[in-house]
Image (cartoon, rainbow, N blue to C red; front, side, top):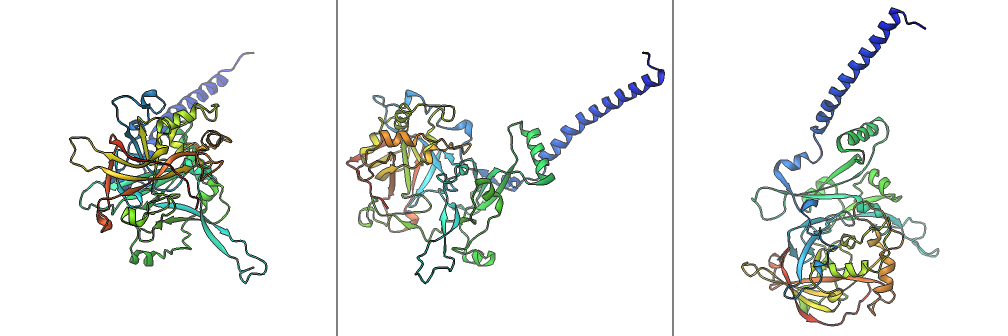
Length: 430
């Protein structure tokens, strides 16, 4: 069958139009993506006069955490390997090279927490029955493992006009796709600008400093019914109840008792913020390596990352579980430093729940490990029978306690650790 000259010209025209479309599309897509990448983002104003606190992932001091180099070596002291804060409880942490230590723990640690409003059961014969009694209950990765995928950044002013953390901001983001056309466009933009695995994310900015009385009054904040949150994060996490965000009041910190030193011993009443129980948490790399050797790894748990235990202080060079017997330790700076050593009361072992089963990047929760291995191999505290223990809870001690202003020390990665006192531990439950 022969094609007429008109059919041939139509075919040629179609090919020309297709070629023209491909050329225009190839030109417009990069230009459009470039314009999208320079559109103002929620955190752009932070970058102008602020600097992000913490180490980048490529700078982490935990690159070698699976290496035998962290085992005890003759002539090599136990040392501080890595420091972490978690500005938003149960969300991703920030690794630091150094940190101020205050009475409630590391500076900026657990400033915020999410909480859900839950109904309080009442007796049928109670006067409150039927009155709709409710209470706020904080949420963690134990119930909502996707909190582990919420990224957190902390931005500090680059200027040194003030020694306080006045104008700092916390930024957190989580995967979120809006419904409708807006969601489709954000999804396409994320894939085209960041690769196929990239997801659109929602960003939220929070102040670091606690608001003044004037700000609280002006913005209508309350100490209880402070539902300042929209439904997007609740939907992402799977929270059905009313979700709110709480900021710890530095003037209303929780007193710590149980295994902590008494006021007479410490020189002040130990306190903490949104930490589970004590101001500081220490983990030993060798102990985690030993526990990992007792776990059968699988595709959902290819290795046991120490970050799953969400410690503030991670040490190297100690024998596995040596920390179990520590009662008083001292972190000593380098010999050529003019800094002072800092002392810590090792209050008790950390009794573990299923939270370490959660991957601290994806929020995926392993059904068994390492919780099963801890209950099997780390049932070591008579005060917590049939429960697994990993890591130690600590309380900072200060040379002067007359004023909160002088109750401060510094921790720097690389400091050596000296054990001052050893003894037995007996966990006291809350």
